[in-house]
Length: 146
Image 1 (cartoon, rainbow, N blue to C red):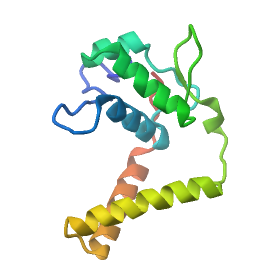
Image 2: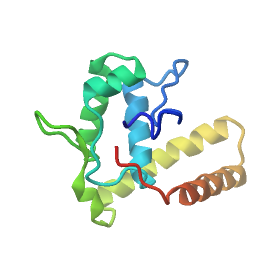
Image 3: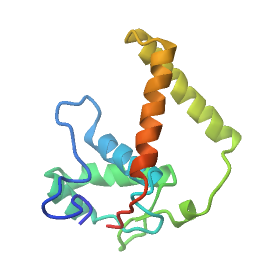
């Protein structure tokens, strides 16, 4: 089951009921993070929409919206009548294109602005980024395949 590695483990996908971020977006962001850290490998099957909705106690349309957003981003492959899978094309290393660089640059600009508004110095933001990337590299060794 995707929402828990073992019955005793906490769910892999956890929703923050107090977050202003919509639930479908929380699911999509967490799946992206699992794929980026290689905890979900290309070709790994995701749970059915009904199963994940039941596991998380939410409406199936919320999970469907997350899966569709992931499909639009090329992270998930949806096939009618089959379970969604992490897109197999992600198994092949690719170089970022100009559109990728522009998108990441815009995201970093927003993070920089948010950090400065929160009172962080550029040095503190850099240290935080280093911590995040270091933690990601340390956790990236295992794979969860659903």
